[in-house]
Length: 187
Image 1 (cartoon, rainbow, N blue to C red):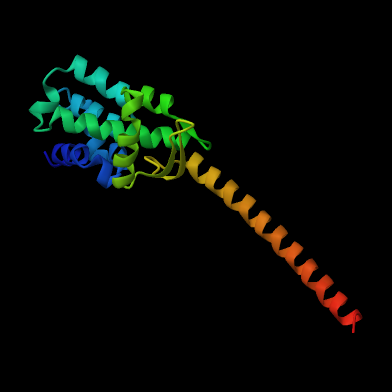
Image 2 (spheres, rainbow, N blue to C red; image 1 turned 90 degrees about the vertical axis):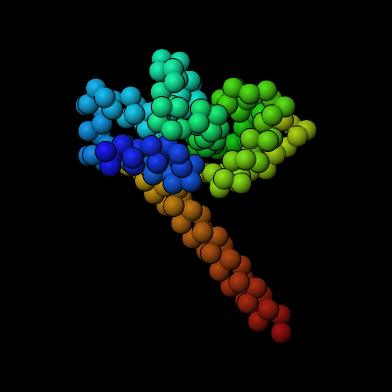
């Protein structure tokens, strides 16, 4: 019962809590093995790691189930769209076209900017919209799940930054020495 309550609470606050690892907790994983709670585990897994399409498939196959948990379908739909947008942001290092966002969220292109604002206000992304190019440049996003692969990528990025900073410091030091040598020789 406690695992069920935690699972429903996670779904209710998924964009706020960002505890995707809940699906890996032993008590919550046990929900998957019980016929009475397997659907709840599947729903939690969707909110932890899935996308809008996964949620829509679940709802189509389990009519009325979301509401039976005391959750509102419209609220869940909004939440999974925001989470899907966060996942999309994680996949793009460059600008994301409005059309790609609209396709991911299953919305009209005209509604993209509203969803970018919602995701920004929820603290899931920081972005700059370019209305002329119809694209969004994501400068920061919340990683829904942080795996070993994410840690390795972060480590590689930090090593690259460290190398870049070292190279810049070396260049500045050479310039400082040249300036000092040139200033001393000119007197």
